Amino acid sequence: MHAHRFADAAFGPGFRRGRGRGPGGRGADAPPPVERAEVAGWFAGRLPGDWFTGPVDLQIDRDEITVVGTLAEPDPGEGDAAAARAGRIARFREETRQQRMAIADAAQERYGRSVAWGAACGDEREVFTNLSMPVMTRLRQRERLVLDTLVDAGVARSRSEALVWAVRLVGQHTEEWLTELRQAMASVEEVRGRGPVVG
Image 1 (cartoon, rainbow, N blue to C red):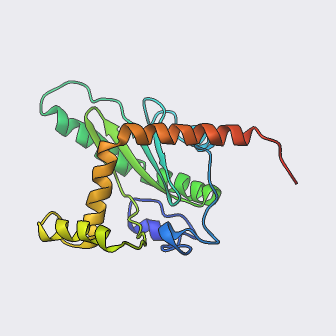
Image 2 (image 1 turned 180 degrees about the horizontal axis):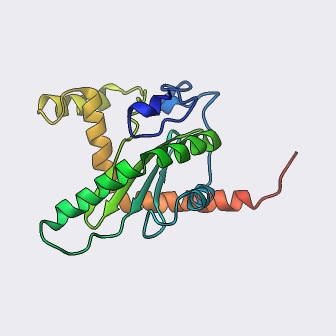
Image 3 (image 1 turned 30 degrees about the horizontal axis):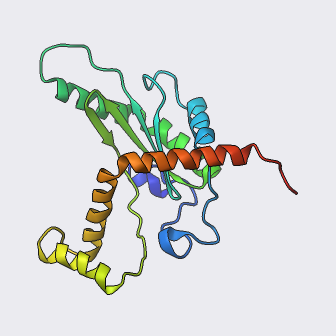
């Protein structure tokens, strides 16, 4: 039984926590970079056409591919609309589990990354299971003091939690810039892919 059978995330065959060495687990056996367009096309071809109302939202890093699709809204009726949307997401999660795990196994084999699934319906959005990866780093005293201040003030319970808080805060306030940066990197990958093959 694969590790991903214990949770809803699809940690495919051969998945190993703490893969490689150094920051972010980048080592000799770390997966190679992937082109987002290629991954998007692969999932578009593998996903059943009746699952989602349009293309999925893909987030890709060195360890994981997160796939979030939009579900059709429930028909208007009695009761709370938000609860109906949450119920539709829960039903999707239960009814598609086996198929999603099979697709994730194939993606793991192809891209060397685990797959996390999620669904959105109206204003409701849920990612079922995400990896939590340790990231090793070295901080100088000035940087450690920032984390310690957050801990002493009760914002975080530990330096590691304070670091997570800081990363999330940066992401929230620089989302537009980060999006532009990702788009620029995607353009570079596309141009590189059209280049000549050597060897």
